[in-house]
Every structure is written in C-alpha cells, then in structure tokens.
Image 1 (cartoon, rainbow, N blue to C red):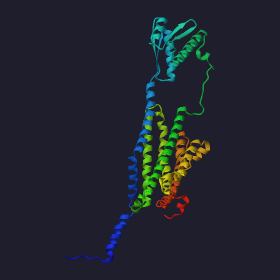
Image 2 (cartoon, rainbow, N blue to C red):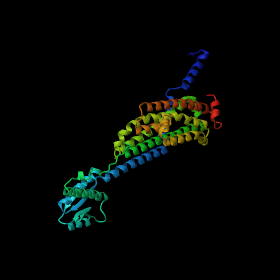
Image 3 (cartoon, helix red, strand yellow):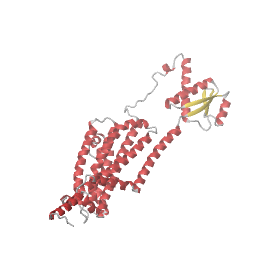
Image 4 (cartoon, rainbow, N blue to C red):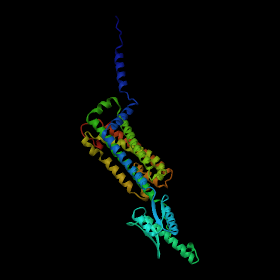
Length: 416
C-alpha cells in the first residue's frame, strides 16, 4: 500500500482556496437577502391584516358609492290630469326634468274629473294631481309632492300661460321675453367635480408615498437593529458582504412597498370604474404613469438612510432617537407640500422627495410641460444616488459597533 504525498504547502493552499471560495462575494447574495425580507413581511400577520383592512375600506367605500348610484336610478313621477291641456303641461314638465336628468320620466293618468284625481293621490297611486281652477292651475298632493316635480310643473304652467297670453296679444313668447333672460358663465373653465377628483387623487398619491416611506423605513431600521442586537449580523457579515446586506434590504422593501402601493391603486381604479366618477379615469393615466417612477426613486432615496438610522442604534430602544430626524423630515415634506401654492408650489415640485408628492398633483391639474417631470425625476435620481452613498457609508461603518448608540459624528469618523 502506497501513500500519496504532496508538497508541504499544497494542502494548505487548497484549504485556503476553499475558504476563500466560501467567503467570496456572490452576486446572488443581495437577492437572497431581498427574498428573505419579502418572505418575512408576507408571513407577518400584522402586515397582512393591515393590508387587508385597507383593501376592505377601499372596496367598501367604492362599493357604497356604486350602490348609492345604482339605487338612485332614474327619477320617475306619476301625475293625474283630467284634461288634454293638463297632459300637455305634464309633457312640458317632463322635458324640463330631462334637461336636468336624461333618464327622468313623468307618467300621466287621465281621469274624468278632479275628484277622481284627488282620490288617486290620497290612495298613494300618484305623486300629484294637476287640475285647472279659476285663475290658474293647482297641484294636489298628499303631504307635499316632490320638490323637483313641483318646480318642473311650475315652469311648464308658466310657459303655457306665457304662450297663451302672447298669442292673445298678437306676439310670440320669444319676442315677449326678448332681453329678459339671465345666463351664467363660469370663466374658470373648470368642472367642479373634476377639481374635487384632482385634489383627492393628488392627496392620496401623497399619503401613499408618506405612509409607505414611514412604514417600510421603520421596518428597515427595525430589521437592521434586531440583527445587530442579537449579534446575527456578525454571522451574516462573515459570509455575505455588508454591501449585499444593505442592497438586499433596500430592494426587498422597495419591492414590497411598490407592490402594496400598486395593489391599492389598482383596486381603487377598478372600483372607480364602477362609480359615476369613471369619466375621470383617462385624466389620471399620465399622472399615474409618472407617479410610479417618482415613488420608486423617492423611496430608494430614503431607504438607505433608514438602514443607516438602524445601524446607528445598538438596541431597539435607541431607534426612536436615531430615526427621529428622518421621521420629522418626512412629516415636514408632506405638510409643506400640501400647503404650497403658486410659484412656490411649482418650485417645490422640483425638490427631490417633495416632487414625488407635488409633481403628480400638478400633472393632474394639467398645464405641465413635458420637460418638467423629466427634470424633477432626474433631480430625485441624483439626490437618491447621493443619499445611497451617505447611507451606505454610515451603515457600513456603524453596523459592527455594538457597544452603544453611535452618533452621526462618530460614524463619520469610523473606518469601514
């Protein structure tokens, strides 16, 4: 039996190579971290319950709106008359109602006399009975008729009287009323309902970004400090580069935030198509398409800073102080963005992060040049690149410091 011998340094070289291969950075490391972040979040009961409750509220509100619209349906009235002239007046009243509501209708029942009409009204078989008495027309009702019907019949009676009097005077109603009409004109050129939709949609865009940035930002910081407090990060950092840890956390939470936002917006748009506001959906297409990249760029610009805030803490109790600057900044950006007006609002729509709230709102209102969202998005991307550099530096330098909370000044002085 022979024994195979090797040169003295060969075995140790193989072992070193094997160890180096095990510790070598793998381009899949960040993907593993990202998938873990997503998997943990998707199995978190609080996350699933809160998302479900939000969806139920959105569906409930839109469903209620659709239900009310369906129940309201077409307006229908019934009127009893005892003469051909009465029928003509009711027909004119129906035309008045249809000018306000296309599906409105008034059914006419012809009876022999006013007493028969009054009997139908008191029995609840008609909304009113129109009868002619000395000096004009009278509408009989049981407890007061519908106000819209009364106004329409009053207009029809007035028109019939004007026509009869004009013929008796040898003229026509248009000539008789020449110069006597007052018309109104809205010089703003805006539809009141459209303006309301623009304001509400713009605020919702801002709220979605604010809530996602705050919720997932704190989640990133919590994840970092929990791994640091339990010393698991020391094991992870031994096999996974710190840069890959940060990249995975940021990308994983970005995908979660974007997915949740897309789900809520998608359900809202589908539900909106079943309401009376569906005519505004085309108006929201361009702002929504721009909102998506603004959302991602703004979120990523802040995500690394949240990770850095988590790395600066050594215990969960330290998070309140390390994340406070970011929380206050988000609140300030959100409040200021919603209260800016005029030129200040236009200028604010180019400020990174604030542009994620203001630019989609301006796009909803219209009158925005094609270059404006492009420039604002480019500014956000550049700002995001800078925050990623700063955030990743702070994260890398403070991550292994477990002796206590690390201040910002201390982290900048550390080597990493």
